[in-house]
Length: 345
Image (cartoon, rainbow, N blue to C red; front, side):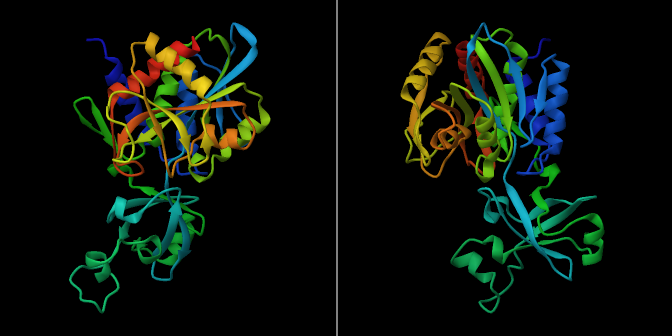
């Protein structure tokens, strides 16, 4: 039986999610993306900032357009390795220990990956113990929890675990879970978008203008890769493919309809570009929703605020539990694919 688009999408996202890629340590997913692009005959290169760029010449080469999906994920970064083998970590991107909960995390040492336990302390305690506050008053913070390796400091040093080592959710906890047409997983932000971009790279042969499909680095810590790319490369339009947070404060009602952003924490998006994307959506038989977001930024809004691109837009797929165990509808991801395929072709 022929594999459906949604089945293919779920399988591809599953492979991507299992590639550890905390900001600045993205080698696993880099290898996967480059190998996948080569397998479908798309030329790509990696720049000095770690972005992977698939360039597809257009029918009208006087203009250039870029679509980005960031390939890094949130996590933690080691601040201190203690003598008893416990490790103190701090946030890397928008991560919170109460979202991850106690359980296995991976420390990506220079020489070895060390599985360890994110720990909050015992519950059979009274107010004499600081963790009692987690039950009654406040959530755990990174500076009040620890990672327990049950190894000595010298063993951790031999593995290359040091200040600056990245921490991510343990690999066996990351496998996506399917609920009918929904996918649930850590790191759908933004590996679901990476999957869409890979499928677009396979499908689009002759875009209307020169097209860069850019898998950007270090977005979660300031859109560093996108800023470097747009500083080095002139593009007339930049579209970020992203996650769109569902919340009572936003008018995102449908799980299956993509979202066009008008504004986020970094500034306004270009309404003329939004209008053209809305037309492409209509031609694709897709209904789009609109939102103004708080506590959010994208490659596109950061690059436009920096003055690197004249027009930017952000197309998102609705998701619950963003920056946590995220839930998204595969239909929304498929719709994003069709909108961009129509617009670019």
